[in-house]
Length: 209
Image (cartoon, rainbow, N blue to C red; front, top):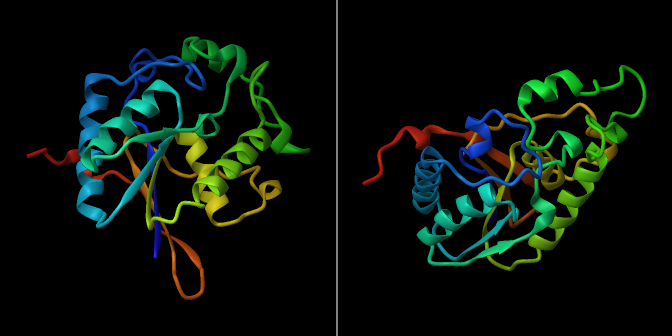
C-alpha cells in the first residue's frame, strides 16, 4: 500500500509577526521547532519501512522537513513547486495591510484565474504546479512518502491525489494548521485512493521523551 503523509509546516516567524506569508521566506519559531519534532516522532511511530521526504524549498517548510527527516536518517529533497501560493505585492506585509488590499473572489466568473493581490498566483497556477510535483514524487517506488508543504497548497495536493480536475477546485479549502498531518493511501489491489485522516494535530499536545 502506498502511503503519503502531507505535513503543513510548523509555526513560522511570519505567523507570530502577523505578516502575509506566501513566498515571504521566514524560518521556524522555537514553538515551530518543537512542533516539527513532535510531528517527526509521530510519523516515526506511524511508519514502518523506508521513507522518502520531499519539501517546499521555503525555509519554514524545509526546516520542518529536516527535523522530520532526522527521525528516519534520510535526506530532504526540495521542490519549489511545493511552495505556498505566491501573494505578490502582499508578501511580508502586515496582515492588516493584506486585509485592506485583498481583492475579493468574484461572485460570478472563473475563480481559478482570480488573483487576490497584484502579482499573486492564481489558484489555477498553484493547483497545476502542485499537481505536477505530486505526479513526479509518486514515481518513487517506496511505499512511504512524506511531503512537507504549506496550508493552502496542501489542499491542492490532496485534490491532486484524489485526481479531482483542477477546473473544479474554485471553492475548495481543506482544514490546515501548523504541524498537522494528513494521511493519504492507495490500495495495492484496485489502486483506489483515499484519505485516512485530515489535518491530524493530536501529536502536537504530546510530550517528547
